[in-house]
Length: 281
Image (cartoon, rainbow, N blue to C red; front, side, top):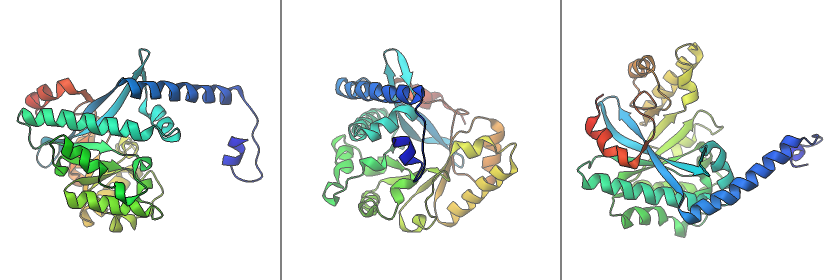
């Protein structure tokens, strides 16, 4: 019945065993994720974001990781479950606190110009504007400056019906945080959002980068996004860069920053200092 309703009016679906298994899997992961949050069984990995113009690392994206009963669970599977079952706020709070803690450690060892990117779900954004200072409060509690953090948001967070979102983004930016628009081009948002919402970085999704070498359409699309973003005063980060050829193409197109396996997979926190010390462009 739920599947039929999702398909719109005057539709029907037949029951299959897969439906039952999917529901059981979701309920199992919901219970396990709730326990993992309570018992502090999650971790955060950090993937470098490399500046092409400066040829150095100036950012890391914080990525939550979860190993349940010896098996890694993909964020693509457990993040939607966290959103559906109201676990996304405690999950987001854990990531923000852990990232701030690790960034403070890095700065104490002399890496003072590093910024951490933190993903926030649209479901984490407060409905009441009186709560808009909570993210900044966490940053300050760890002895960091707002400029040390860049918040990554998806296009759904820019929807015009979410009025407090615009207030929150403006407040964060006035305080000194930067904002990145993640998965750009994969959603349905209007380009007019980019004029109204204070976004500093546009992140081009890896699905477009993957086909650049073989698909002229992807190449043109990436080039167009870069030109458009720069004309609006935004910097561009491309995700999913895995080859030297892709790096050269994006450099020629004027991309600002690169993220992907070409430079590094996400790293555990204990490897960050060695990676930064040994890094060569």
